[in-house]
Figure 1: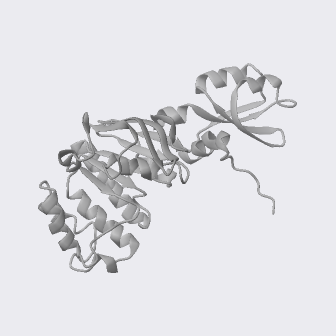
Figure 2: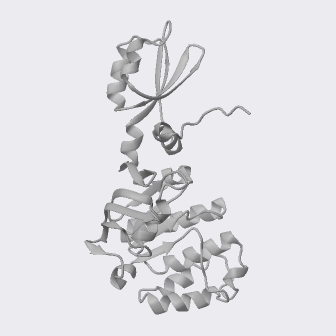
Figure 3: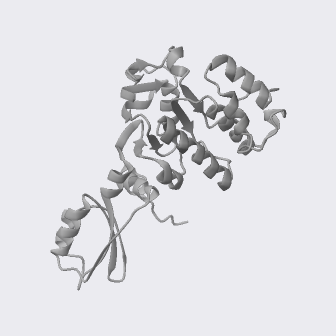
Length: 298
């Protein structure tokens, strides 16, 4: 549904994006992760037609986004830095949204009053940051978009409201095949909702796979031998190693079955395969990009 091909975008000679390729399927939840400055927000602003790429192409259903009102009418975008008209209430913003998006669902707006306990007649700028986020979701969900693009979407929301918002979004994914593209530093939360994940670093996508494939392609081994680690263990693609006495923890990239078969041929005293969280995968995958977690001596 969303195709991003060889996108490059520079600012004053610096390439914020340098050859980005991404595929997002209809009805999926795609999570984009990466360190600060990786280019995530720049990419989102290109996807929503705010920026123009230097080179490359972004299409939705084979149509370009930039200066395409028909495609933009199918997109709801909630940025990290929210903006509402200074004096506007939720009712004012609802009227404005209805003037732009003909598919705005008035009945849904009324039903969602229970989910978002906000005063629709109160100026939004007087709300807390978390309440402003609730207002943004309330209005955006009523657009019934085909694509929801979110940049740090639940920052400022309490745990109950986070779960409520994701419940509504995932219901739309299941029932209407809405597509969600989300950039977030909350990797634990993405792990619960995403089908596919892309990891960005310095303007490029290092990895783009389904979450299941990513988790199956990197393994945490708890292993022990009679003596030291055998030299043959280094034939594995080891991303990180730590020891506690005779027990070693190895982070190994590769297929689980092949790794365990190889290790068992080395006659270990103990071998156990442990699951990795998305946060751990992110840290170890970027470990070779100068993002390894190291002890800091002060």
